[in-house]
Length: 355
Image 1 (tube, rainbow, N blue to C red):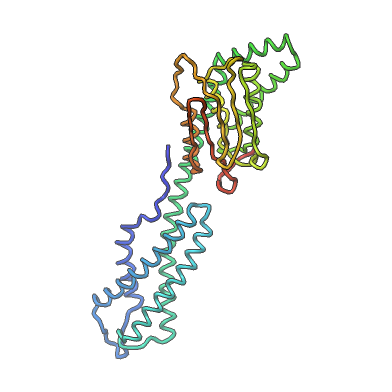
Image 2 (image 1 turned 180 degrees about the horizontal axis):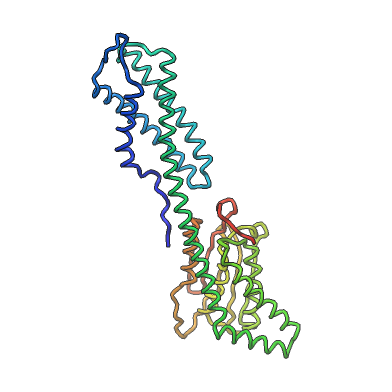
């Protein structure tokens, strides 16, 4: 489920209705008479002038709103966006309204020159109108942003729950339990100390799976701690047929990724490749300027393995919901590689990477 963010401006009807209404209010507020008390223009003449003034000011302020929404979008930037629009909108209104009155003075359009208090009054009322209209724009935008964020959070939560459910299904299916219990049974007889460690790793795997349902993101460090436990189960099961190397820079440990990302990739590699002592599956996990890389040698099973690629689709869907880039899947005749973007804490405002 992809969530549509609020459009920059969707104000066609607001403008069609708002400009004439504000022009009428301006006509009433700035009702002009010459010094003899008679009207220089009739009702419709004054209204058309007011309509032109309103249109110019409205469109100028609309450009200000568009600019600040593009540069400071979303609820998390509301304070900076509103402050910027208020300052820029006020300055823009003062300049435009003063220029219009100056034009009236030079042309004597109304039959008299505006005194200083006339300038101040006109500018003050215009700024008041702009603040009201800008407040309506921002109120609608804030509500739509809040609604989109709520829908997005719910979609991401559902995606995380589905990941957890799929992972738990994979780990509690009879084959997984049988294989691990068989490995444990052999270890109890052969190496009780290793058997004890194996039980500890198995409990760590299940504990992590059960704890991730409330997390949108987790640190790479926590994900790797989990993967060490998960990989130990696979190494115990496949012995010399499974090899994994992890080379992640310490500076990258605090970056964020969706939980269970690495587990899904390891599970995908085990599912689709031959794993034998003479043909070991070799998995490498490392980081570079591209992000987190997970790659394995490609030695597909001769028997057809049914795959809907839900693991990769799941990871890709999460990154789209998080709006943090896309995963990159690369495949050659000898190698399968997945590049995962690493997320900086400051780039995601709704991070809950710990309990």
